[in-house]
Length: 241
Image 1 (cartoon, rainbow, N blue to C red):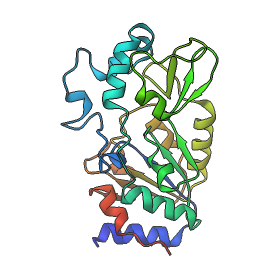
Image 2: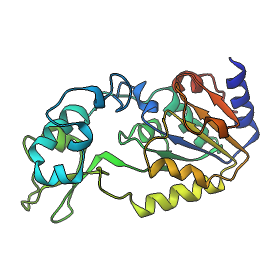
Image 3: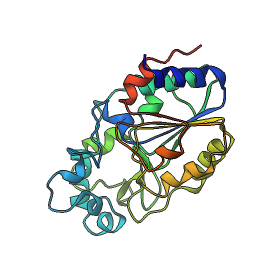
């Protein structure tokens, strides 16, 4: 165990109001592609850039094209929770971790057993008719072709925050409240480049800020502890006691 991981273990041992704020790097170790790494979605070739396809305007105007990309790249039902997801769920069960705030839409924290999860960007596991609001699950969208339609004839839309759309106010409120009350905020697997999500960490007023990311982030200089190792590898060494 490195000195940095030992320091993280000490922080976890000493505190029982910890909040975790995570990004795409938490899920890449489960095989889900991120956007900004060298082999991420932003560096792959499509007729349109991913940030254009995953926009509200594109969804409304080119819905079939949106769903072609969405089914191909966003619906990954083979992924399983990794060591980070599992340890965070274990920390919550032990009363140490109060909440997970995630930018991911893959449901892996819940699959691992986490109960208090604030999904800033929604989830691919929830889909709703834009006309009547009827719920449709992941399997329905995965098995559908073309533009999925509700029984009422309305277009079904994933409960995912697209570019040009605002974040859910209740989710933001819950996340801000958890971060503001936390003694320790652990930020992992995120470049802290996506706003407004990254701005939520400004509400932290606690004792220790921990950053776990393979590359540098704009907040490294403000952190009490910086660990530049894969997040699953870090959490696999943590003992919950």
